[in-house]
Length: 95
Image 1 (tube, one colour):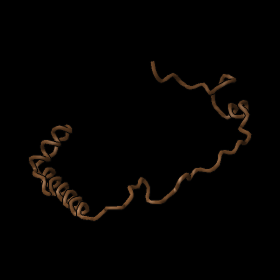
Image 2 (cartoon, rainbow, N blue to C red):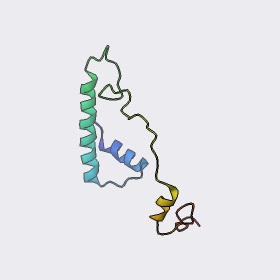
Image 3 (cartoon, helix red, strand yellow):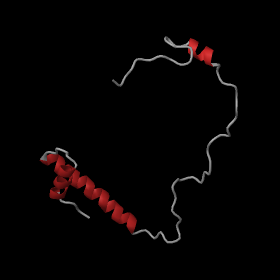
Image 4 (cartoon, rainbow, N blue to C red):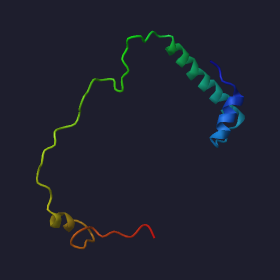
């Protein structure tokens, strides 16, 4: 499937992209090559092939949650340059 430079220019305009003529021509060739490859993939017989979301059949790759003691608040606040006894004090960003 081939795509024309005019179609590329139209899509670029809709996407608010500024492309010069050389970029439009290059993009038309590249998109055409991609669409040709997709056409080639569409020729494959995929009957009976289950859709997948991941290449490996992994159900849960996460570790089990284990409760461990955390750093005491006072010790964590001791490392900050500015704190109020309950939390770190940072400059106001939104006015």
